[in-house]
Length: 125
Image 1 (cartoon, rainbow, N blue to C red):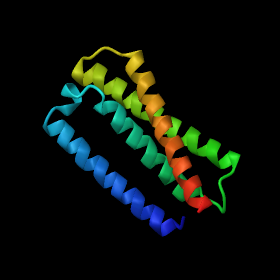
Image 2 (image 1 turned 180 degrees about the vertical axis):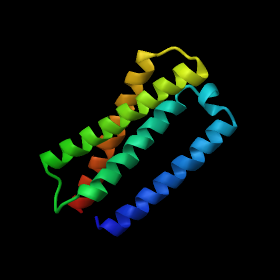
Image 3 (image 1 turned 45 degrees about the horizontal axis):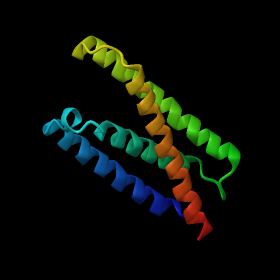
Image 4 (image 1 turned 90 degrees about the vertical axis):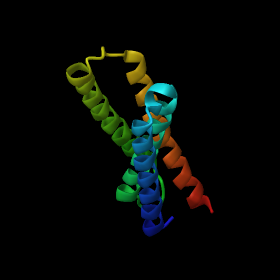
């Protein structure tokens, strides 16, 4: 897949995530649709995986490149969870939830893996 087409896909996904997050906050979907947070973390991991692929993609996917992408997505996911932890403790006064954090990181990594599979499949064609 060429970098220009990948960048266009990245921009579409970011725009979709922005609109979905805006609507979810406006209509309180995060509290009324229990699984929406999982979908958003998956999409976040997917676009991050594509972004890392866009920056790092060589001729073909290698094990080292796949590992860099997964670790990059995990690193950003952990940073996001730290932000959520600080926000929830300081502003929202919500207690820490290890199950939610673990689920969020799982879906971040799952999205990153799907981005790798997406590019791998495009390279096979």
